[in-house]
Length: 299
Image (cartoon, rainbow, N blue to C red; front, top):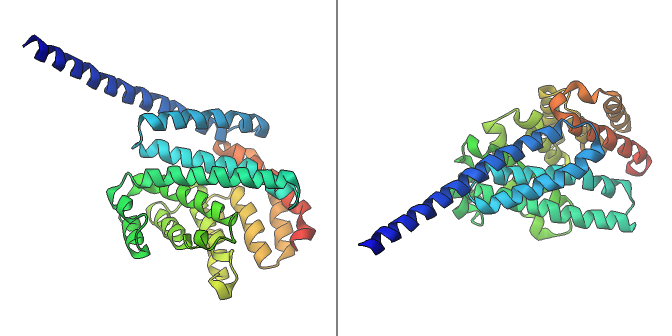
């Protein structure tokens, strides 16, 4: 009898321990989420660049404590994608092919985008339907994606974002390119669930996808123009959408005046016009300057 009582007591302590661990994980997760919000409002780019990795590592530790927390996993996907696109890709653009710094940045970007993609997939596959469909036929995958609710909006977007950017760095890999329909399906579902998600970024992303290939290979320039117009209309003070419009659409259309005009407007814009996204706006202004310096090479 005493042994049974002792066993029950130990089991209760174990349950309490699991409960306390989950509570602690949730509390620190909320703090880390607030930390991400604070970083997005930071105006000093170098300070933000140094501050973001510790937040990412904290989130990774938390994800081990709660592997089914969709919010933390999606936030990790966002953090890796945002960090890589905002900071690491700058060096890919800044340094020419053949420069060791270009190659080093490319290797880091591939690694970080892959991590972001994998965290996003982990968030999506907490859903049983997505877990079964992730490696199934595309029709099954698309059906599972269409069944996801708003809870998965961020996970869908940041998974697609990281995956597409990883593919962009591995264009010569036919296995990688095969995933593009899945990425398109995820972005379409984001737009269905939340048309103005993250300052119209889903529309801008769809615009990039639509104009990233020649029309004879499936590109759709009129759709790209339409999607970029929606994105920039949704959030006129979110400057990164305008940079993407210049970098991808204007360049694909070989429209040098549009390229120059859009980037010049970004450089002259007030980054603080959208206080909660000052960092993204400052990065957009810096990327615009890098792209303008590359104008002769790009055209």
